[in-house]
View (tube, rainbow, N blue to C red):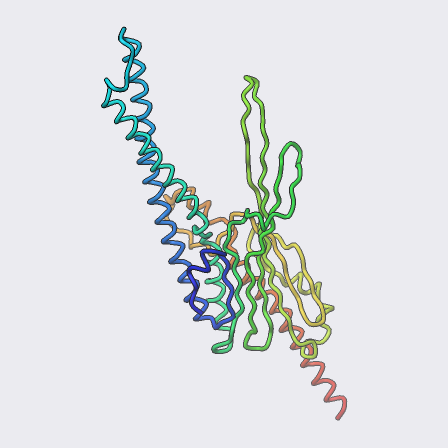
Length: 332
């Protein structure tokens, strides 16, 4: 389905149940909307500063000139005798007002600046899963592209030490599909954020406001299978844990195995990336670039989790076939 741009800019939610090519086209449209919004915000920021700074400077200059004229002259200062200063002051007010309008406009358009990682991760996962899906198989995709600290995502407020803290839970990604072998796949990602604020009084008596943010992400991959084809799957929790392979630094939080399903949940750092680029071999590569490449790769993590789960599924399926063959031999 095509993205309804007007509706999307009102809710910033995307939900569809369509084949992968259609979903990729929609995600491409979201990427273009995001790029256009970033360009608009950049232009508005530049225009706002180019009008606010000259306007404020002109106002200060006119005020200083009028004060200096009044101090150095015995004749009382009059605006009628200083028309250039009056015109400059009014021009400064006009520039300052225009700059304020540009800042206001920018604030109104800020929600349109989407987190590139979110639709980027969905696009990478769909591209990788496409080879394991039946032709034209529908995939259910839900993306919440709102800012992570909107009021609807706030779950509680509390004091943590001296910090007034707001807690946010952001379940922004749900991807569901039935793979070609009949296995039902579900991928979810939830981010948790904290906004902390406090006021601190220095030794000189000045009160300053300090704030900081912290958070992390939880990625969960689960498979649902037919229990008759995977006998005693629920007894393989230990094998599932041992078979799990994850990228460095990614923490395994939970393993669940039942008769008809199994799932893994991991924890990623809050600055995860959708897909890490290949590290350049040049020894003169800047240090900040190498640090960026060391961030948690969410798409690689999801792929490794899926492969780890499939090892257990294939083992249970193979064992079921062996038991069925053994039972047939015994009955002959």
